Amino acid sequence: MVLKQCNVLIKGKFLPPQLIEKIEKSFTAFRLWEANDEAAFLAEMGGKIDMLVTSGNAVMGAPAALIAALPNLRAICSNGVGYDSIDMAAARARNIVVTNTPEVLNACVADFGMALLLDVARRISEADRFTRAGHWQQGRFPLSSKVGGKVCGIVGLGNIGQAMAKRAQAFDMTIHYYNPRSRPDVPYTRHDSLVSLAQQADFLVLTLPGGTATRQIINVEVLQALGPQGYLINIARGSVIDQQALIAALESGQIAGAGLDVFEQEPQVPAALRQCDNVVITPHIASNTTETMAAMADLVFENMLAFAAGKAPLTPVA
Image (tube, rainbow, N blue to C red; front, side, top):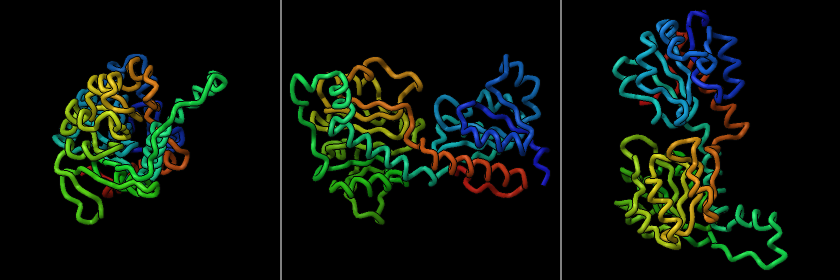
């Protein structure tokens, strides 16, 4: 198998270093982020690129303009499970294969979702700031909220959602969910609408895909239904929340708090969210463990090898 016949464009430097190293050892690879003039580079080299390696996050992806600049592109291999930042319509119109990395990150993302839930409920990050600032000497830290016995409402009961449900059950939480289709294979309570789920949930956990179909699906009505004792946890995509409505709900006490790993315009996080004591914010790191990053990188590379060998990819996006 002569892999050097495939020219690979690596979209961004934030891909795992071990993946970039493997690609550059096995293929003729080009680092797009190092081009002094990206447009000039694409004009000169775009027609020679066979594969694009990117990530599904908002910073990278594969917009229609980039796909158009690569007229001989035949495969897009993405390091991540979400692919809403990849223009699937443009890819499908040209029969470009798109792969992602499902399954291998489920456990770590769900772990992180549970960590955010526990953090915001028990006010761990807030208590850390309180202690570091020396306020303990002036009095006791305020009370927090118990997790056990509460309802964990999961929006999107896919692989990550089910992994989250198992973890929440271990903390004696009751599981309710909203999903476009019923899941008779699970013993959880299904709701026909997001508002209904939010009304029952103490913690509303978002594990649904991003994209136009789910854009700002968490809106004013859903936040009102969640109520002043309810918490919102987002390990999905920032686009699924009406961010301004969330800020207003947090500032007014309409909801109790939030744990957010993803945002509307990453890496920008609104000052209003950064200044809220009842919000735990992290920089899109739910899958960022050494083990999961290695597994994702391996799967991206295996998809690339399969494509280069003329075989079916391991994890094509449907």
